[in-house]
Image (cartoon, rainbow, N blue to C red; front, side, top):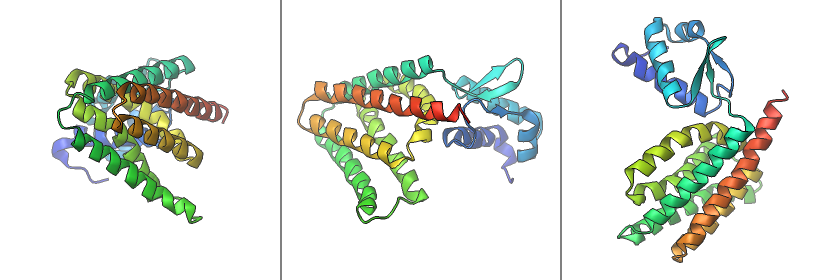
Length: 229
């Protein structure tokens, strides 16, 4: 693999981070120094630096017996994570409701919902989503949540959510390829958008928490399947 020698550690980190978030490396999978050195054709130093960054971000953990592994969350960890993200997203909604130009925010939410609905229009035509459309949908799904953080005007809340969302993304990518999960998520996004547009911010925040709680059930179901393989 050709890598710019001036930014080895940064590039390796970005590649491995994407591999983890897109499930190329599954939760609990070992990341061996030797195999990564061979893959990237580099010395151990930039690989170690990249693995340290992944560990600091909460995407990998050091195990004294086996080395570095992709983070694997227990059921209790997942419940805590999804509940916390529901609370953070709900706060982002309430903070964003104070933004001075709500029309801009409304338009971004509306555009997100319309683009998502357009992707699902192919299902009505009897055609399954392509891999590219699934990736587009995932990005739109993430951006729906991030819009509220963009307008919440609270850097501490945004930073806290960014780190937690990395771990959540590992698990959401395991179940968000299923059409039933995608449609359930879309229904919640539409409901949250409608409540927010009508100025019922408390309802929108409560529905966001309910949305994350339902997503937790998807994550628990998926992890129970993968653990039996």
